[in-house]
Image (cartoon, rainbow, N blue to C red; front, side):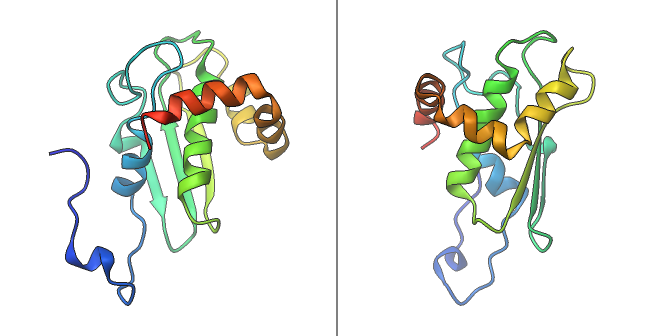
Length: 141
């Protein structure tokens, strides 16, 4: 069984339904890798244990592992994750996306780019990059 099971209370607006790590992971697991016809989950780029959600504190942390230590697509993968969560989560959440410690030769630079609002906005104004992000997200809809 994939993902989280639906519960009767999921559709009852009177029930407080905090967002949890399983729900966030379900949003990103099926994003397609920019270079491979596989999902981030299939490539072990993302996994449930590296998703942290503090619903009360309005924070989400995603840590991902690039396929190789010098992966040139690491920033693009992080951008895809960010866009997916921007589109799916309530605006109240601050989302941090990071390369897992020790998994990329330029992890500090990648992390800085992924968590800088101006850089992310500029990247999304690039029509080529936006098209690639859309293609990667098509499988996660």
